[in-house]
Image (cartoon, rainbow, N blue to C red; front, side, top):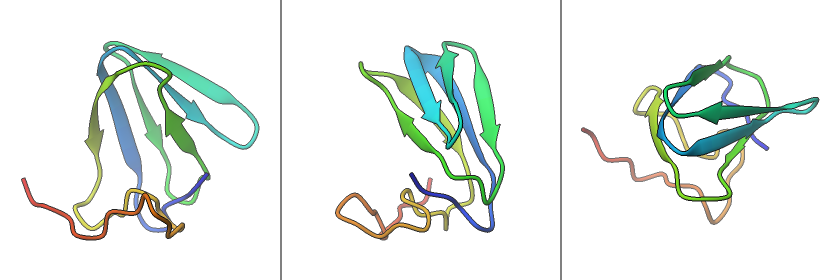
Length: 79
């Protein structure tokens, strides 16, 4: 689990199924559905099978939020 102190995240599922786990519940998102995770809310996104997701967040947002580990990508590319 991680959180982003200064920015919201929008997860839009293009194809497949994505789960967003929170402290008290897990939300299932299917193709065509989206969810906005407000800043400061602990969450973990995962998919048991391959999923296509469009993620909307500021370019400076680290993928692991307030956690720094082997999955952290700090050299961010611009689109």
